[in-house]
Image 1 (tube, rainbow, N blue to C red):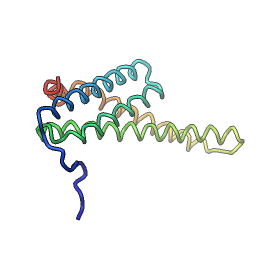
Image 2 (image 1 turned 30 degrees about the horizontal axis):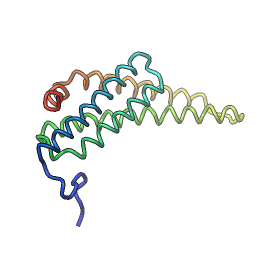
Image 3 (image 1 turned 45 degrees about the vertical axis):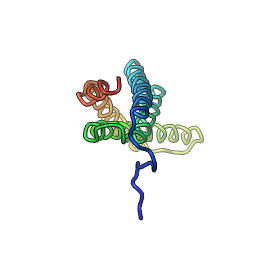
Length: 151
């Protein structure tokens, strides 16, 4: 028998649990929005990494509290977070790849200029897509609706 992905046995909705969930998720979303704002100031690797961490924290905390919220709105927001997390992870993967290429070059290993160019191009395109989705997310009705619930 398979277990449901998010089901925490014996965790039931209560007003007390909802209050705790609202407090935690409000904090996590506030942090995420702060790091998104910081990222857009520089668009550098470290702020991107901070956004990735904040997305993970929001997503995994959301999974704990599904029982507290109307499922349709909750899942719509969850899937937006999941998409952003996937996109940021793809950008980060290419950053790591480029770092490894630079290490190889320092060790005098020949690396194709075409390969490096293609990776940079792919990273640029993914970063643009990520930024577009971040902007849509911050302005989304789904996020605003959820904030009304948890505030």
